[in-house]
Length: 176
Image (cartoon, rainbow, N blue to C red; front, side, top):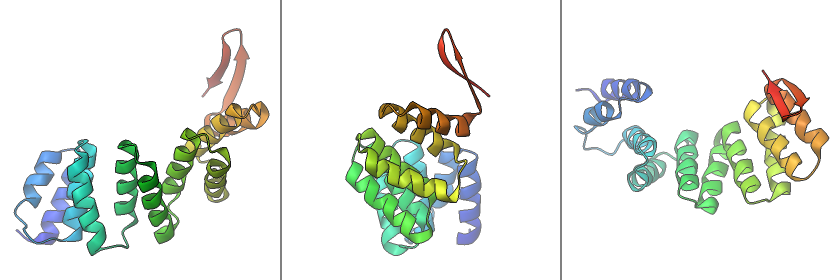
């Protein structure tokens, strides 16, 4: 089967979460094409097979170091393994390639988890400069401010992300 057609079929199966079907299509190709390695690595990441994901994604990145998605997936994989430094390094590579907002968000999330509020703020602010209503970042930014006891800013960001906030006898409720 033709490589291009096989890659398209494998991507279709990947999007349908038919991982074994996608891997079966790609197993016939012995050459080390960066796209095949990326797809395999992505599938293994989704299946939580971190060693295989790492092996394939790193091999893909060595052949093509211009695919931000490869570095984003490496960042996700290292984050899942608890290797924050390697995760941040790969997210930064993705950002340098195309300003990838999700990678900036992930970097901020790691710094927030580490209670490094200043670094987290820096990355969250960068995302919000480009997408002021980014739901995910506004929620994390809101939580950052709540941890810092700045409730006005905290709830302000959460409101931007979710909609109406109502205070009740049960505490704070978010009304969507």
